[in-house]
Amino acid sequence: MSNVMLTFAGDESGDPSFNFRRGASSHFVFAMIATAEPDVLRACLDQVRRERGLPAYFEFSYHELTSTRLRKSVFEALNQEQFSAWVIVVDKQVLPDYFRSRGGRQFYAFFVGELNCTFTNCDKQKPARLAKPSGLGRPPQSATLSPGVKNLTVF
Image 1 (cartoon, rainbow, N blue to C red):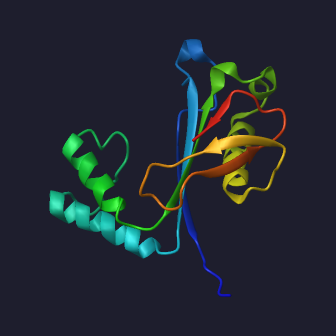
Image 2: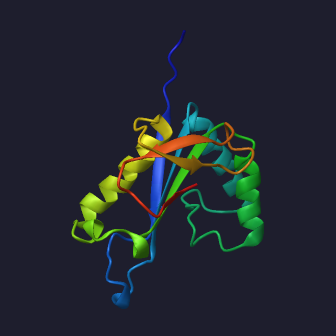
């Protein structure tokens, strides 16, 4: 049996603050992808840049993908490639008070760790749901979350 090395990349949206009256986000979202062929994904995005006349340094971020055509081009191109994706969506407004007393780094580390446990299936305490859009790797699978975490949505 041969070993396969995976490359992971992740990004977040939202913030760890609970000061909603001062503009804190209501949700914290962290997404991660894994691929055995990161250069193929980079080449795919480079091809989209060339086809759409974008600069080589163009970043495919939420704020940059405002064009429906561009967004569709990116997703259609990526849909042809081999990678897996996981996303955790945390509704901060319904989390227990325990999380409010933690600092930003602890909050961030906890939920990134939860996502890690979801795809490595390292905690069998509480079942959750993990699903991905069609065409992005393996089909939906079971996942788990640490005990005591309530009102946490895993997609």
